[in-house]
Image (tube, rainbow, N blue to C red):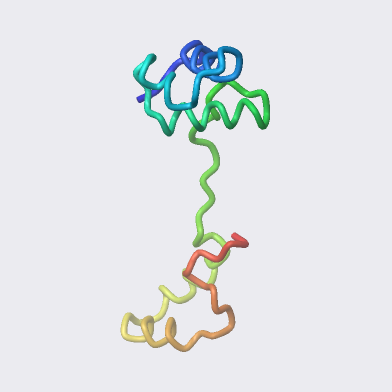
Length: 100
């Protein structure tokens, strides 16, 4: 469930200014405890009260291997699995390496 920034600010103020524990405001304002804790932590670290943006660029883990995959798909079907198993040029290929 999406919560407005005004609600986030009320929860944060209850903890930071009013001195309530991080577990009390969620019960008062009927929000999840984990959400309230994240909001307070984000405020303490960055002074941010707004939600982070959603969506945006979602990079494909296959993009670095695009040319290799297209070349592989041009081969007869019975060659594809052995080619996948035999290719050791990049051990992270198709595993979604952290560098992609």
